[in-house]
Length: 143
Image (tube, rainbow, N blue to C red; front, side, top):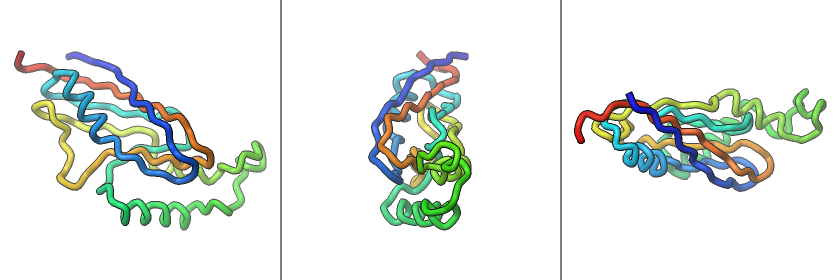
């Protein structure tokens, strides 16, 4: 089994944001030259998350509304009482989705559905530099 580790780095805007990283992950799998395996993704930081969605403006708006309903920005958070940084809601929201994702690939292609994209959800208040660790593990069956 071969393993390669790559980093997808990107800068996000302040406030809620969803970034489609599917093409970047697909390129990493392609350049790994592995045919079968999985890619494990992990976003560094406690105010961002990874998932798959149908990436389109309506769904992005729906996600933002969902997070606001579950963990409103104007809510009271003990994290804010301790650190006074105003992002308690960001931490709560990120913990609901989680920082990691594993996607299998077959014949060098991610096994995503037709309307399924890999996204980073940035939930923090200020803009951020984000790094996503991508570990690609698998086998090469042809040369």
